[in-house]
Every structure is written in structure tokens, then in C-alpha cells.
Amino acid sequence: MERKGLRTWWFLLAVLTAGSCQRQERRVQEMPDQENCVYYWRTQLQLDSTERAFLKRHHISKVYCRYFDVVMDSAQGPMPNATITFNDTLPKDIEVVPTVYITEDCMHKRHEGLAEKLVRRIRQMNETNDISGVRELQIDCDYTARSRRPYYEFLKEVAEKWRETSNHTSYLLPLTYHLSTTIRLHQLSMAPPPVDYGVLMLYNTGDPRKFQERNPVLDLRDVVPYVKRLGGYALPLAAAYPVYQWQRTIYGVHIEHTVEADEILRVKQAVERERPGLSHSIVTYCLDKENINRYKPETYEEIYHH
Image (cartoon, rainbow, N blue to C red):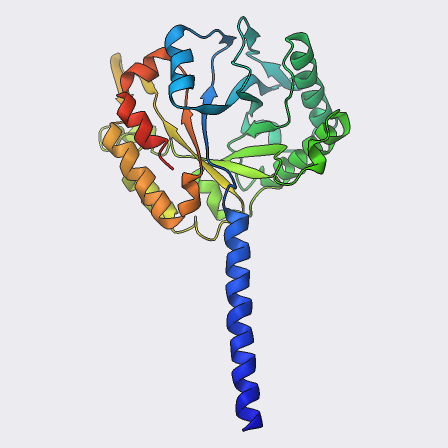
């Protein structure tokens, strides 16, 4: 009887421990707050009345604002490019997240001092343009198996340099984010990067060469093979959806790729079914009058539905 009781006790302990671990894993995987966000990807910050009304109507609390790109120069190495000009300001109640796009070839090897230069440049841009209260940075890079290790080391250096130059106390606060990165679907097969969270890019999912078969911007059939990896991906994730139109010319023919609203919502349902936490923090790419007018306000409300 004692042996049977002991086995029962150990069984119950194992069940409780497993349940506790699952709850801890779920907390790790999910963003803690519900927030509506948007990317701003133009080279001049200038908002019109339609864009300002969009921010207000959809309760946008965070704007990922592209500050500049970093591209590889054959003579000088990684260099800044296409820097934004601030001709306007965002509403005071919206958090600005400086975002930097880095081309993948910049991460084929370590570049001494690159993280420090990047952080210093962002700080200088904030000071020059009276942008205060910036707590978080985002780095966007289509890293691969080849560039993953140098990129992850670079991210660690960026986080360290950002912490060193921060004059705020948010590092002492719980659930305060300081560094994020974009996560493309193919990157879900790799170990998560050393950041506070990732933004899952649910766009540019298809092969541009097969545009007659599927929409290269977003097609559920291109997303489905990766969905099974979401549940076990050990990094908090926000979800970003496309609202833009991709225009290009192929053999002299003008082609426009626009994602139907129903397709965006089908993808949203599919990824949230596998990982419900993806409904917490939602981003659209990107803020622009034409993109706003491309879909009905009700469509945006469904995209931003938590």
C-alpha cells in the first residue's frame, strides 16, 4: 500500500510539474499586452490627415519607424543608406521604435564597432529631431543559416550598447522591451535570436517567379507548411500583416500584387489557431494613405482584432 501510494504521489507530482512547465512556456511565448502597431517605411516622415485619422481610429500605440538601412559597400564595409528625414512628428501618445534594415551580406562576418555605430547614430537622430522616450530598437534582417551566428552576436552587441547609452530606468521595470527583430517564416526552423521578442513577417511569403500561380506577397498555401513550428518557437512573437501593393514590371508588362482582405484574415486565423498569443500584438505594413484606402475600415478592425 505504501509503495502504491508513493507511485501515485510521484505521478501527481509529475503531472503538476508538467502543467507548470507548459504554463511557463506559454508565458514565454506570448506578448503580455494587447497593442495595435504599424510600420512606417518611407524616407520622409510626413503624415496627412488620413494617416493621422487611421492612427487614432485604430488605437495605434506603437510605430516601428524605419530610420535607415545598412548596406554593404565593397570598399568601406557596412554603411548607412536611405536615412529618413523628419518633416513631421508622430502623436505624443504613440511609442516610436527606431527600426533599421540590414542587408544579409552585412552579416556574413563580424564587423568591429558596427553595433556601437548603429546605436550612436540612432541616438543622434533622436536628439536632433527631439524624439524622446525611445526605449526599444528593432533590427530587420533576412538572416540565413550562413549569417545566423554573426547576426546573433551582433544583436547581443546592439543590446549591450543600447543599455550602456540609455539614460532611462526602464531596464529596472518588468516586461519592458528593448530589442526586437523581424522573424521570417523560414527562420522559424532556427534557434530563436537573443532579443526580447520577434515580429513574425507574414508577407513576402511566396516565390516572386511563380506569381502566376500564387500571390508572392501572401498566400495561405505558402504559410501552412511553417505553421506547425509556431507552437514550439521559444520567443514572444507579434504578427505583421501586409496591406501594401507590390508593383513591378516583368518583360515590359506592369504587374500589381494586392492581397485580398479575405486572404489576410484566413492567414490570421490559421496562425492564431496554432498560437493564440499571436493575437496580442498586431502590426500592419505599412502606414500610407493608399494602403489605408485599399481596404475597408472594417477589414482593419478585423486584422487588429485581439
